[in-house]
Image (cartoon, rainbow, N blue to C red; front, side):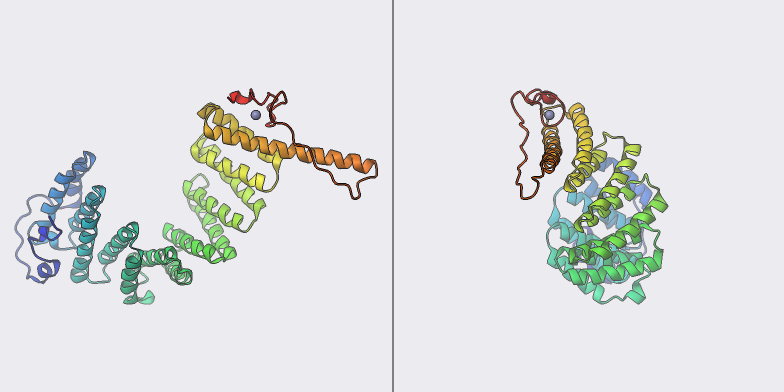
Length: 391
Ligand SMILES: [Zn+2]
């Protein structure tokens, strides 16, 4: 079965060129809700063959369903494409999506939102199949016939611009990507204002390219602005806001602004602990970044406090022998050893100064033993072998 079969052996262009006939009554109700009601149980039971047969029947019904403006039409096509994708029939899916695009271009016109949406769907599928050059060429060709001033008011056009920026970014064409993202960013702000998910997404896309270009400062300003807007609009307990805090931590870390990374990470951790609890995987992941950031700043005492919390949670959640528990314990041993070394260095220098021998003295601090009868360096007070039940 090829993709032309549901046009009864005709190509899209032949069908479109034919004069419309008087439609006969549809075999079943062709509204979106009715179609979805029939489709959902088949999807749930993974009956893809039946689903496909149903959708093909829907699409082939008389003249009406071939009309791309019919509500059931894009729904049917998208469901059919999704059904093919979930069966790993990628070539058929891609061919179907190309047909859909051609049909929309010819019937609805190249600037119709449906046409632009089907272009997006096709480009996304090409991207997933690593056909990046082709995705870029198709978008570039389509966008060269459009114009920001004329088309910028259309959400589907702005969405294409973001997609094109993303494709250029992925292809390493950073200057072009930044220019395209900037156009989308300006158009989105004009169309929907800055307190809107579309604007946030446009700003994040632009910030990502700016970061790659080494323009860290401007990326940081953008990400901060988005974080503040999300906090205002969605509230501090919203995961979208936390996602912004995460991106902000990243751009701050790139600039080695570790004090600010720490403050931002602590803020995210605090909110996640209050909302999700301290044992939630996302909370734990933030706690892990916090201890890493503290180690980076050589704030070993503070790192040790966080690592001890992580270790206690890991022992009860995963058990003492779990690889993650062991990794946390090793990090804690490191932190405690640095604390010990700096304490011993201070003591040594204090003694040297007291004896008036500090000048020109070279000292190497002794490393505390980890094994044998000595207590474990993690600070538990147990012997290393006994420490939290290590084998
Ligand atoms: Zn230990």
